[in-house]
Image (cartoon, rainbow, N blue to C red; front, side, top):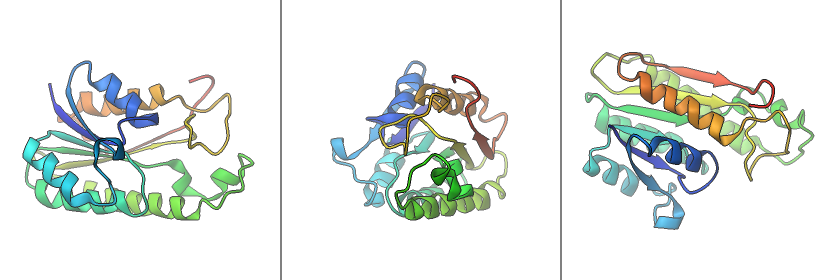
Length: 188
């Protein structure tokens, strides 16, 4: 059983991950609803370290927050057998991923932040040494959540994304998955 800390655990993808992983692991969630704002990462990182979590799931999105949390936590965990899972998005691969769904809101800040998270995760995962901190990037395609740009009958469910996170947790520490990008097929 792992001690798993997760940001944004009260709705959407984070809720689905928390519910699934709590069946076998101890979960500690961080969200605005319990007084933890990811825009102020120092307190979250401090608590994750003091709780001695084994795994941190960097899920909650706020401008620039995920990259700051990643680097602050990695700095503390670099030489420890820990796992950081960053929740990216395939939208970082192309701004057209939103426009092709017919959604015209300016997603540039979101896409830019997710692209920075991609690079930070890649940078840190490429220096992995067994027995040290592992970094994984989980990049789902369109997921049916309240913040999704548009509904689609082929969108991933939050439960499908949770299963992918569970897969990463289940193979750790025997296999380090550096990047897992995926989209829905039919009715996932």
